[in-house]
Image (cartoon, rainbow, N blue to C red; front, side, top):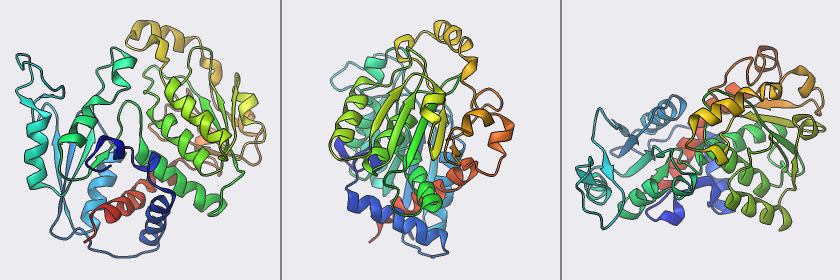
Length: 337
């Protein structure tokens, strides 16, 4: 978030005190606090790819704070934009991010961006050049609504959900992050953000995935540093059962194999061979009355069984609901006064 690239990751790079402010505000909003802190203000939402929970919760958040959301979808409301500096714009993009961001900054008090990774090279997409360009050229705060590398808004909602479930101090709680199969796996952005946010909160993390589904090397390096620097512990294991043993939370999520990134046929073949990673009751029983978390959308009975999703220890709807108050807290912190 903010007008510089270093500040666009929201929960990943908020100071501990600012993160506490956002979560405390979120809890006040959930308790019924009414604040029109965005009265007379507008937030521009630029979606370069689809959204259900993020778009709806953010637009409702702005409305409930007394502001106005301006929704823009790439391909229908505006055209392709060029993010690279110094190029001869002889391609399909008729406008540069530099110009679009400068103009929208005169209309809106903040911009929220969901970019579309090119999907051909992870080494290119992991740079998050698109949203970094918007942040660098905007004169108002820029909020990351999920880039290739990060999904900080989901991590905020997940932290609030953990607080509500286990109390404000979650130090020493254990979270198992378990890979699940999907014919259309997402990028690793959600897992990257929730991994780092959990370790910073003092949560012990056990990460499980099949061979070849390792997370981004730079993010893993940062996670290991956090674990060795007084945060929660990090254990990397090879089976879902090893991860789930003794866990307070089993966090199920599908993500693409980065080594086959940009090769959809190979990626689909690899996923088809991993149907044994389904999260079911037998897996959940290995935890300590473990709760299920999943950021949604979820493929029922492929990633998680109906019995677990609809069971009494499923937190998936609570996570989704908490997108609204945490985003209200973030907007309030960014734009008040």
